[in-house]
Image (cartoon, rainbow, N blue to C red; front, side, top):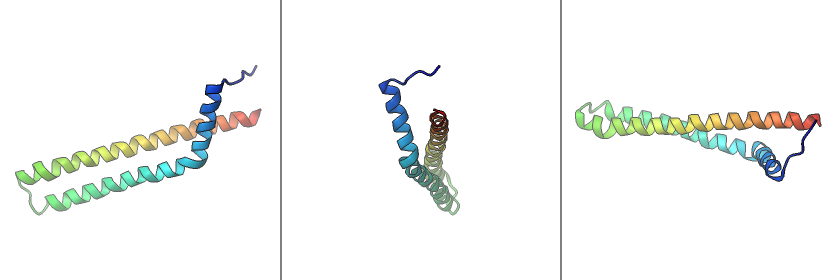
Length: 100
């Protein structure tokens, strides 16, 4: 017994399939740029901290650098998780629509 989708559900499925086909690769590139920024911030923080290991450097370079690196890392992690979830949903919907 199959139920028809209403307009809102059809629009969601269509948008999700379009995202999976057209925009998911671009979003992955954007999130990988955040991963590169994590590396750049960590390397920059280390380069600036190692030659001058004093309290001033730790407060004004290491702590903000660590915070920014963690923030970019969180954006990357959440973005990759979102992409993986949406791709899984799109795959299931594609398989379900192939059965009909």
